[in-house]
Image 1: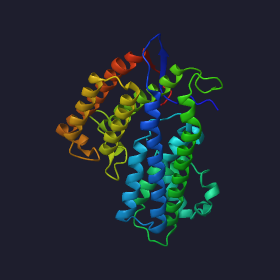
Image 2: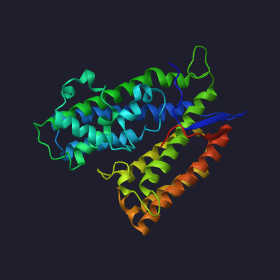
Image 3: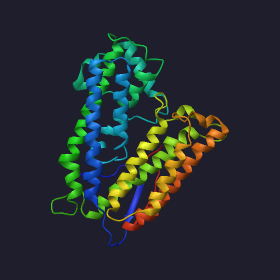
Image 4: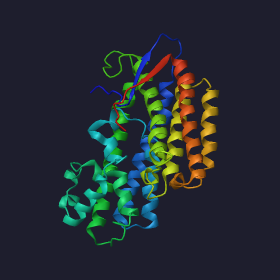
Length: 333
């Protein structure tokens, strides 16, 4: 199988003598990230098996899994792309409200698929993954269930499905995707025909991750000045919208540093620091302050600094490798 980046970027490579440390990116960032996600998802499955009602212990396990997901969610190629795993793990934005409707219907019908783990993956992505669990654990429409209820079994089924996907992703990165990146350009490698292709796919993930944070994680709740949309913030029910911004940026910073190693990236480092400084001024973890004029300004500043950060990365990291980027609108977000 030839892994291609599923991103809204078209990258071209010009002649350059610079080299990227693909090995650092793979061995220090990606593989530890997929292992952490697999471990956290397994711990969530174990906790859901022990206590499937919305207890502090289960919520903590869910948050740990979400934290780990933020460390790899920008790698939207290879194993994360197979079988639509990205959306099955994190179906967001859900612009038409499919998740609560599907979960509500499943609970009302007591859909027997919760007891059929070999078939559960055939469900719509809207009823699977981290955001389906967020509804069940945190939304008033679902969260008042008992230990012997159908909803409890649904939580266990979704957690088991998530753990299965996380384990498969980790295994496939170790067995296939990582060796393909590390052997780019070698005889027999039909995934990356030269080292430039390996650099390109990682750089694409870096830029598209920054774009997603600016346009979706921050842009969606900001809406417009006349019509802010706080209810559109990612993971707002659990109050982790701002945390997702921070964790995503930390993962992207790690990827950028690894790619550039051993070279420094002072402009990009300063831009990352500027974003983190702006994040500290935001008071509401669910970004609900966008509904207030003064509060909105602080979130806008974060978005603006992420956009500036992206341009710094394009100029410094992309420039180092002779990469230029142009957009298409294939993602549709």
